[in-house]
Amino acid sequence: MKNISLHYLINDFEPANRLAIQMDIPAYSIHIHTFPDNESKVSVNPVQGTAIIYISLNNPNEKLIQLAFAANALKENGASRLVLVAPYLCYMRQDKAFFPGEAISQHIIGAFLASYFDKIISVDPHLHRINDLREAFPECEATSLTAAEPISNTINDEITKERRLLIGPDSESKQWVSSIAEKTNISFITGNKTRHGDRDVGIEFPDHSDINGVNAIIVDDVISSGKTIIRCAEAIKSAGALKIEVITTHILSNDKDLSLIHKAGISRVRSTDSVQHPTNSVYLSTLLANELQKEF
Image (cartoon, rainbow, N blue to C red; front, side, top):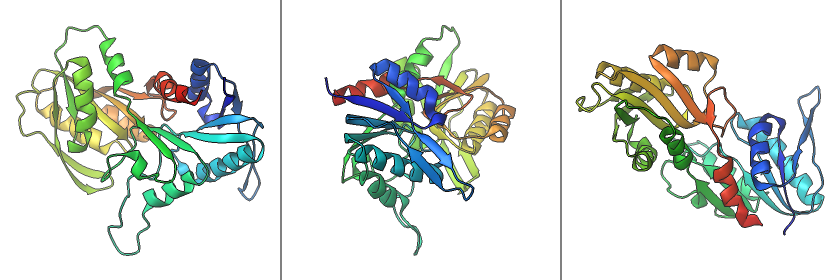
């Protein structure tokens, strides 16, 4: 069997450890020492063969530097192949310059990560005008997985006689909500979103007849400030939904955002462990392990 090991930043210990146990491979912490001037010293456990680095790239600016140092140290100390598992992948949203002088973050981060890694694996990356993660990483292998199956399994495990409806807040969410609808045999609808700013959106549902009297499950790929989810909840509540909950792949919301989400009438928020968060209840270890088995 090929030598293979997993390496993680301490903040990602729980999901990384679940993945290592699932794959029955050794796991090592990447040690970070921060100097008084905020520079980082990074130390890794030297290994042979394939080294997997598990890191969720929320709050990415500091992590990207530490990730580059760790990848370089592993290669310099014996690793022959590097695989990045970034369940949440940063800077994928901007794939073009909308105004003169704007940096195209997807292209820059794609080239940056490809210079260190032989393969990159992510889950439900937030892509806009491209359909395949390989377009963002033309210089290395890249695989995009979807959390639709583990989310669907979580919904299917619930025993209920309630009439449920899956809700996608906008057209971009249709690919996720439709896939989950197919796996759970629950009907779905999507809304129309108008964005006025980073934290200012409007959501409308032209036909309210499907919403009246249902228990609604809002499904989306990422919740950041939560404004889209709040506006969606307000719209379906006014349309007659009896109960509203949310399930998402990635959640970046802080405590204040989460409090506002609950105040909007949302009874429960669930997320995958792509980003460590109090709402985590859907685990990605099996999904990731199935893809990583190809490394053996």
